[in-house]
Length: 40
Image (cartoon, rainbow, N blue to C red):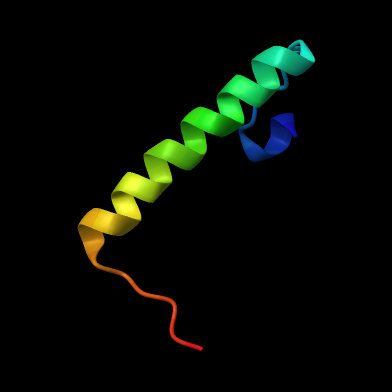
């Protein structure tokens, strides 16, 4: 992971859940603002 530029860190399960929730919120906003759509 370090070779790829990532910094591994140790978090509690609750911290990981909070991180994922923040990331979902952030990317949902970005996608909505961009107008991107998934056409299937």
